[in-house]
Each structure stands twice: as structure tokens, then as C-alpha cells.
Image (cartoon, rainbow, N blue to C red; front, side):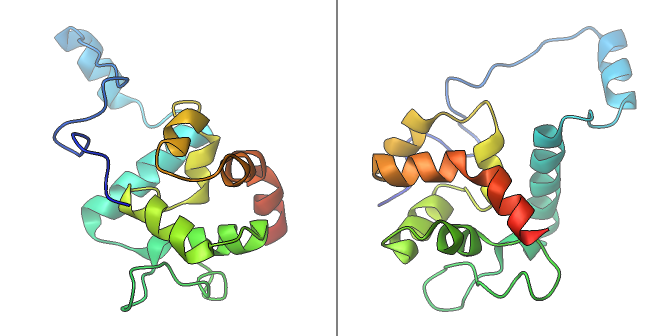
Length: 145
């Protein structure tokens, strides 16, 4: 499966809303750090890692581009393959490939209210796999803690 056409860093999805603020509001907004919202913190962390070229959350095998499953041993964030292995979903490598091809490199993204199950279904995953991906994030985080 390929990346969804028309959606990349330069052409975001239509569902993404933009805010226009006065210079005063911009200064006030930039002076505050990322809120206490864990989803925003996770997205900010992933964005910072991507911009710095730090791939701790998505250590990739040189063959196939699938994140490695030994990331929990090194003390880093668990990989998407770790999450899919935990869920015991069939076709693990295919699911991880589809998700990583579409920029989904961490299980934490499934906690975001901005991501819908419908969008993930459109990538070609089964309803069972999508349901597990969304519904088991908290259990997985307790498991790896």
C-alpha cells in the first residue's frame, strides 16, 4: 500500500484546521509550553524527533523498513512492531509497513482524538485490527511500564 495521495507535510489533510491570531495572541501562545495534554506532548515529542533526525521511537531494520522489536530492551519507547506483537494481530509486518508508510510510527497516535478509525480503515487494514489498535493503547502502556 502506498502513502495516501495528496497528504504530506506540505499538503495536510482537509480536516486540519488553522488558527489565525493577532500578534499579541501569537506571543502569548508561543510563550507557553505544550499543554499538560498527553496527546499534544506526544505529538510534540514525535515532531521534535523527526525534525532532529532522532529515530528512537522508530528504530528501523535495514531490510524492509520495519521498526525493530528490541527497542524496549534499550530503554527507549516501544516500537509499532512491539505494539502489534502485543496485540497478536495476524500479518504483523504488513500492518507495520502500512502504518509506517503513512507516518504512524508510535502506538500513542491512536490515543489522539484527531485520528479516526475510519481514516485507518481507509489504509486497507481490517476492522478487527483497527479496533485493537485503538482500544488497547492504555493496556499496552501498562504492560510496558
